[in-house]
Figure (cartoon, rainbow, N blue to C red):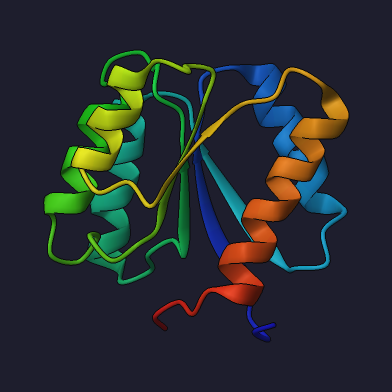
Length: 141
């Protein structure tokens, strides 16, 4: 584990999922700071500001169905920007549609995970995302 906290951008419009994710991360073994964007436009604004401040998130957890700009549009911006493109993007969404999965991978999402409806399963998924990206995978500093 790194000594500094990991920065996570959660792009999620469902307040219940936001709250649940916040609670899960509070109990985590990994130190992380969570920034929440409630729609695609807010996420893009935050990311562009992060580029200017040279304080990029270490991980983006992105919902697909968002107001203003959807997850595909956010993903396109992230993966086409020279400073943002190396940030891992985990799609965490309720859609199980093959078309959505294909569209996300075509736009270089790092993974696509369907949100579990069960609390215990959701807890495991968020913990496993964090464990993989902050313990198993090697991130750029």
